[in-house]
Amino acid sequence: MERDTYARMRALEQTHWWFAARRQILAAELARLSLPAAARILEVGCGPGGNLAMLSGFGAVQALEPDPESRAHAAERSGLSIHGGLLPDGLPDLGAPFDLVAAFDVVEHVEDDEGAVAALAGLVKPGGFLVTTVPACPWMWSEHDVQHHHKRRYDLPAYRRLFEAAGLKIRRATHFNTVLFPPIAAARLAKTLTGQRGGSDDTEPPEVLNGLLRRLFAFEARLLRHVDLPFGVSILLIAERTEGSTPTR
Image 1 (spheres, helix red, strand yellow):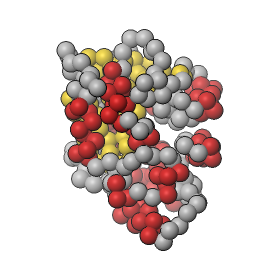
Image 2 (cartoon, rainbow, N blue to C red; image 1 turned 60 degrees about the vertical axis):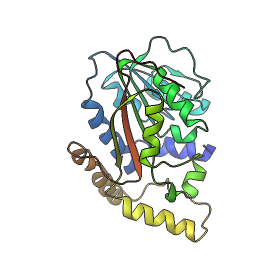
Image 3 (cartoon, helix red, strand yellow; image 1 turned 120 degrees about the vertical axis):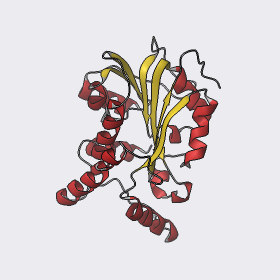
Image 4 (cartoon, rainbow, N blue to C red; image 1 turned 90 degrees about the vertical axis):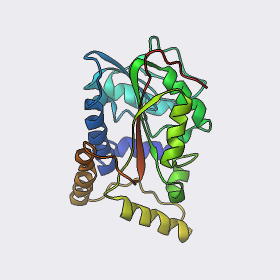
């Protein structure tokens, strides 16, 4: 990502409605997994570390982040081990495989996404889980994606195929950020159609509006207890490495 994008993430990831509500949704999904009490957890692409405290509620966490400034910020904030490395072929030796590997809005940044998913799968122990999110709807491509150095946005069938190709069993594949999908999609399309450049979606609205947006987005944690959501700004996919399976590339 651009340096100013990393800086905005560091400033916003604790309080901005999108980051805060996404953590609530992800925590609710992780709580339904059959993780051991002393789970070994790895977050790949942790950025400035905004998810590490949440993940630490489920076990012992390590993290990987390629950007040195973000890595230093995450280590200082969390006190955890933050490794350098790149997907798919630049991963360090992290020891034994993990009960849970998380990659939140990471795969869309990697040119070789099939290789990235296979590499992530190789970090998961048999019986463990790989939990990922990515931006959805290729037709929503906008300046936001350019600023964040996305390589693509995904439709759900194409994203599922990456995990099937890696030999993983898909436990859940759903859209989310559905409640706010209409205004977000409209705003992105309007900017694209008018050729608007510059500016950023990564700004925190006034406190009252920020709180309202967070509650609306976080309400999806309740919906996702019961149903997969048919559309949304993002995709959540949870895959399992079954006993005896070997990730393939």
